[in-house]
Image 1 (cartoon, rainbow, N blue to C red):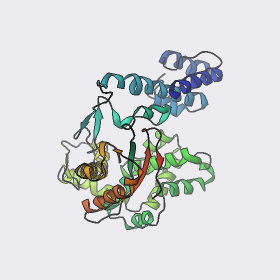
Image 2: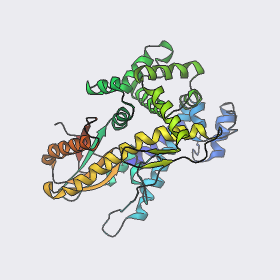
Image 3: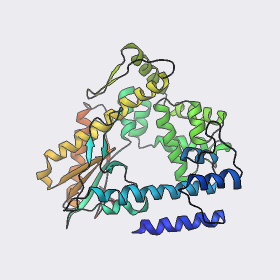
Length: 365
């Protein structure tokens, strides 16, 4: 598998960078390198930790490479060797899908954790379609933003999405325009960080969290939050509403009737409660729309000779006969998603098809 070749290559690259053989999975060996050989200062409150969070804060090419190799090690143990324990005699897996596995209302899976299979290392190629058939992935684009629009009533953001704009890229572009940010926010990784920041803001994360997560100064983190608020003007009002509901009733009810209860809210835990509450409304709705859409396709499976397999966050994976059925399936799912929210929002689905989960190509419709 390409995974093993990439793993070996990355370990060799790390050894060349360090100048010796390093065991990236040994916290003692990595700590000796980072704090003794490279002379990095200990992060306040973390000591000589070599956790992923601390190595990201330390930064630098070597720390980044250690994190990269560790991630591949996790892929091997969890998604290659680990999955073998759950394969039946027909070479199938039957993951346990948890309807109430998270406090946010999202689905979760275990034995194996199918929803967290990485894109890296070719691991997804292990999941193949039936003989002479294809795998189709239906991905609800910008699902959480669309659910946020329904919850907040943000017409400014609604018009932005309906015009085809990408809010995350717009945040990225505005940050790049500021000279101090140009190098930190360029390229694909820059957009990825901008997207993470947008959802962090929607879910109530503050300046300190932004500073730690993105390695920013207080001024940079403040500017980041201000930039997001300029493009998402309803955020402060949405967060204030959620806080009020947490204290007024202690019970939040999602669009589809899920309930999230908050018990004793004190100064020590109120910020975590606010974060979970703002997260709950959006992620619960998004997860339920996706799940109900998959069930709709299950009910109609005989019409197109399809077999819905499982949901993955905001997408659904389906075994299909060929590409000819894709346009009708997409149209049905988009229409049904809109129907579920009483026409409050349009939904857009991106379709990708291929012989296995790791080699899917976008279908142009």
